[in-house]
Length: 309
Ligand SMILES: NC(=O)c1ccc[n+]([C@@H]2O[C@H](COP(=O)([O-])OP(=O)(O)OC[C@H]3O[C@@H](n4cnc5c(N)ncnc54)[C@H](OP(=O)(O)O)[C@@H]3O)[C@@H](O)[C@H]2O)c1
Image (cartoon, rainbow, N blue to C red; front, side):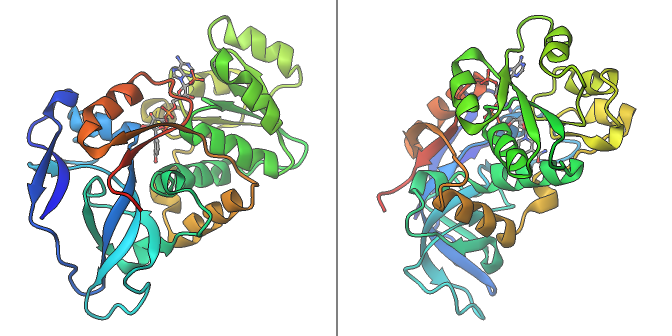
């Protein structure tokens, strides 16, 4: 049997339950992974509340979760690697990662670097691929100044660091408690409470070359108001404003690949990228985990602990 997170109607965290189902067996081309850690992401909240039915329709009962890390338990026909017993990390496209066992196509896992923390490994794929796509969409150049909204968020903090690696400067909006950390990365933090447009004018009097929005709340409109070319703006959240202004909306689906996951994992292991972990919850406490995530200011990934390594 396998304990899995499930919901059978739209609603608040109260519709989430951990139930026992039959352990999946991997069909040809797939691997079965015994999960150690799994991530949670804000998009899953909107799906569970029924807000994304136009884009990602739901059938009930519905599972949860994309990101996971664990140990290969079984191989489906035709799969020879990674061998049973290998530590791996990867993603599910089937809302099934928050479970004791997850079955995915074999090319949706990579070998987990030994020194990569299980908590980071199990919560990396969505944020890593989203950040990679968002940065690529606006192609920052050395010497440019890029505005990143939500610069201390899970996606935003990776965006910030990937932009800085190009030699561009980052001005990042964030709550005050994250400003020292953003400075330590080399970014210029700015609060979002007061007159943001005026504050941005003071911090970057020559304006911005590109904007990467991870928050919504009018940042796409602001980017256009600031005179940034629409093809140098990417939002991963405000699709309505993106359609109006014809800006990019590149996110996880654009970059989701084992190549990108491998690249980002390697940068983290080498100490060239930081991922903060805000909290760890046991699988059975999945409701509390999402309750914390819903607050929107977590300052790092929230991770579900499914089993001991
Ligand atoms: N399109 C895609 O492929 C894709 C993929 C992943 C995520 N997303 C979406 O991207 C968004 C961010 O995801 P995440 O995982 O990074 O979330 P997260 O870790 O919870 O970060 C949320 C961020 O929003 C900031 N924020 C909250 N309220 C704000 C406000 N009023 N003004 C400015 N900033 C505010 C927070 O800033 P402080 O903590 O500094 O206050 C924090 O940086 C979510 O909406 C998610 O659904 C899209």
